[in-house]
Image (cartoon, rainbow, N blue to C red; front, side, top):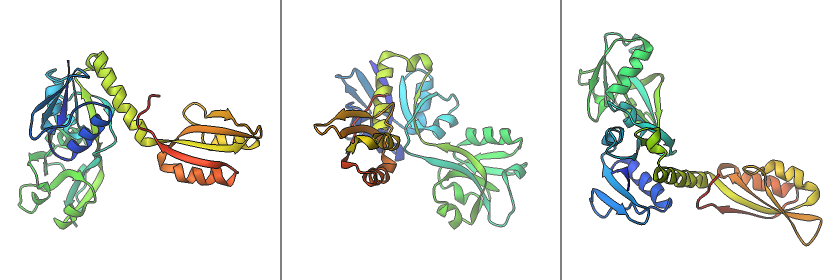
Length: 282
């Protein structure tokens, strides 16, 4: 039976549960249960702290897990990242007191407060800087005001919290994070049940990015229309009763669907319909 770890709380938990459920797995928790068996798919789900998932997976206790890239890379023994999931995105940045003039390359001898010690130490080594990393759990931005750090490294969204603490972002990002599927190793990811899980999840991710676009177009405008809707390999074209017209069907990126529908209408397409895709295999 395949063993998969899902986050039990935090920003990743809801997105992970929704994605796996859409992939047709029974992973919804009832209350605070720690495990759930999906007998139909021969999978056992475990609900763990996001920070602990990489440890359990890398040691082979769990086959696959969903966690944050930052949490995985901060683990003492990171697991193998096998599939980015596109949600839970965040940016890890340095911040210093406003007006201090500090930049990451000048952190030598300074104290850097963070909740991700291994990531920061690795980044400082990459920059050739020797500094003291002070690990704190939560409210990293107050560390400078409390006098325990000269700068901080933290997950940044809008930067408003840092500005309220009198800090400004400096340097290039330490890393870009998002939710990911991790496995112990390539052999584990290649197990038949693991490959099925990954294929299903990837199918949901594709479906979220694309819609199915259908329309009728004069045959003499088909080449132009096909350039607008090339599909994955090529659009599906079918004849209509009127030999001067054809029906076209193609997968199209969701983010530009309305613009493309407008352009199709401009070249004479009719009956233009966009439909959501529940799942896909490419």
